[in-house]
Image (cartoon, rainbow, N blue to C red; front, side, top):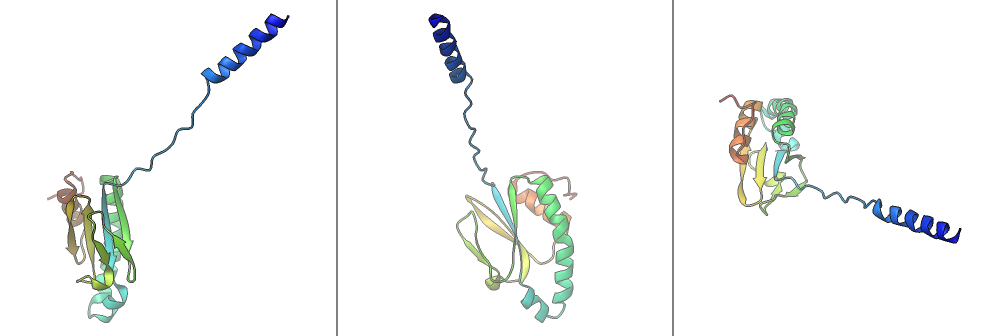
Length: 143
């Protein structure tokens, strides 16, 4: 009876060790690139035609975010407003109040100089510029 109890205990412990689970640690995947959509609303409202430009920019921004999410999944999209400061992957800083013009987009990735698209961009213009910068194809770029 003692042998049966000891052998059952040993088998039970060995099964626990053999089938023990380790926790899988998830490593946060860093985005390979960054697209910053920036606009300075107070400066735009004070300029003639600035309100219309801001409305057009807002309209295309929603479509551009969808294209970036679909065609460039490892590229992070951020919106930068007046008073915000962001560090780009290439090591430079971006402050909307110092940008000329008051709205546009910045493409950035580590090891490559950033590129600035100024003014209102259509979804096709954005997709083609992003394809060229990040060296990928996008179905939205019809040029």
